Amino acid sequence: MSDEQDPYRGHPAPDDAPLTQYIQALIQRLRALDRRRPLLWDLTVTGFWVLFAVLDYSTGGWRTVARNVEAPEPLVLLMSLCFSVPLLWRRSRPVTVLVLLAPVSLVNIWTGAVVQAAFLQLIPAYTIALRLPLRTLAWSAVLMCLPAAAGAIRIPGAADRQLVSYLWGFAFVALLGIAVRTRREYTEALVERAHRLERERDQQAQLAAAAERARIAREMHDIIGHNLSVITGLADGGAYAAAKSPERAGQALEAIGTTSRQALAELRRVLGVLREQAPAADLTPQPSLGDLDTLLTGVREAGLPVRLTVHGTPPPAPASPGRQLAVYRVVQESLTNTLKHAGPDATAEVTLTYTTTGLEVRATDSGGRQQTPEGEKTRGKPGGGRGISGMRERASLYNGTLESARLPAGGWQTRLRLPLEDAPP
Image (tube, rainbow, N blue to C red; front, side, top):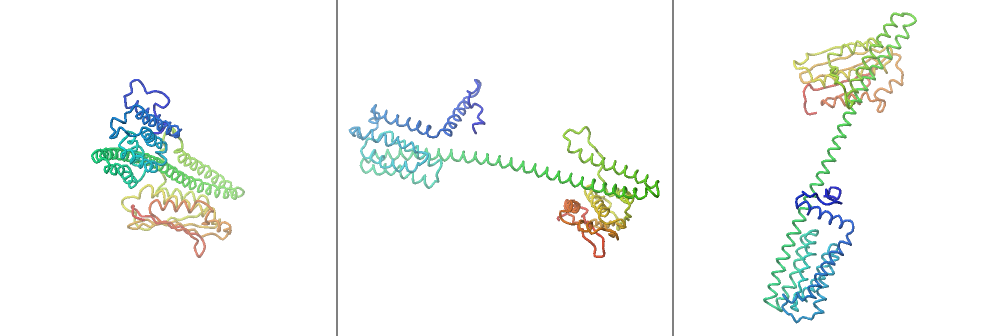
């Protein structure tokens, strides 16, 4: 738990809080102090144990367990300081500290003084168990127990008991360090997993938002591109007919108004999903194969002769709404490109072919005698627009394929193949 997550950081725990929360709050404060000022913390801990060692010497407490109470007192004081002062480097260089304490421990057992500060060797041993590899921990056991084993030569019975005490003490701190280390690594793994899940959640949200933006962009491109092309054709035809046939010009203006209103209604439906609080959901169905006749009628009114041919028998179960929308948009985009690029003398043909496993759609135009070179170069050029790439994206959503290319004899053809059911691509 970090300082920011500590519920009692900076103020005491509530009066009705359990004892464990008081202890946890105190531990968090100590850890925070250690992180902010590690040197101050090391000096405090080392000073505490130096004071303990000096009091053990000054009060004569070492004589209660000593095997040789006649040991020189200056040597006892020196050994007490040698066992406690190096603890200042117990975290940065625990192995070095244990190596320096090994000869002091040998002198301590060999002289029979057996000062109690010798057990301070367990503190760097705990640090080794907490942070360093197990191989280093094994060598630490040798460094601690070897002086006691060597002392058995001098004082057989007493050294044996001292060796057993060292072994039990080392086993306790080693198991404690390994347990704390395991718990810490487990907690770090949980925290890392939580952070990874948060990153994955954010990435999934970004991918979903990008997919939704792409879908809306495709819909807006198809709606605006097609309707503007139809309006442009109607406006050009109306301007041409205004001088010779005012009635045809009025029909063109009426068709422009109808097409504009339809485009505006579709745009409102598509953009309505972007509102955070929509007053009511628009339940207007998306275009389907049944709306192809209406689409072709609008294109014919814009001045492009187009013919629809159907081969084969539609399956008993109709294609999914998404597949039908994909077919509709591909036909719409193909005819829009014909209106924009093929010239005024072009004709178009849409062919739907049903098979036992899928549906094939061909949209072909004848080009035109007055087709401009710029229009022919722009159609199908990478970066020239989003039409063909949008059609390919729609096809790939349903494991379909789309081909769009210039015909050798002139004109353009777009071919869409869609499976009627979900299948591996």
